[in-house]
Amino acid sequence: MLAEREILEDKQVMEEFFQQLHDGDLATYGFEATRENLVMGSVNRLLISEDLRKEVVTYECSEGHEERELVDSESGTPVHTCSRCREDVESGEREDAIEHLMEIAGQRGTETVFVSTDFEKGEQLLNAFGGVAGLLRYSTNV
Ligand SMILES: [Zn+2]
Figure: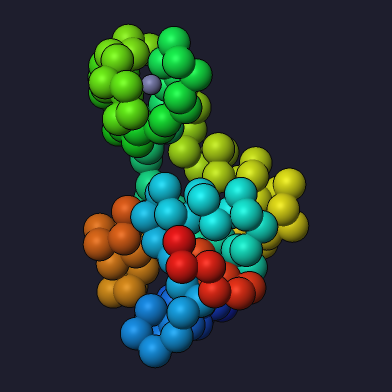
């Protein structure tokens, strides 16, 4: 019974996401855009696919430019080329992508919803939207 009720909630939140995506301006998706909105405090609900198995590496070049890459949990840390000064950065701080996002969400009073992949739109969140999305409090154009 509990599982069924949770799926219903997941379905409702994904319906709301698609509605905003098509007819509104209160949806964001993908790791970077969602993260940027989270940092701004504009995310009301953070949607994370419960099957997301990614880690985020934060690189900092010698010029102090901070950039991130998402990697599969099983794979090694790739060399990152800074997009601003083209410097190769060999390594960076690596952590679980979900924990990374939830920490920011916690600081901004954003509710996190874990979305099952046991229904079509839940699967789409993982496969078409990078497993991460957000419903916004206000439009940000990010
Ligand atoms: Zn740089």
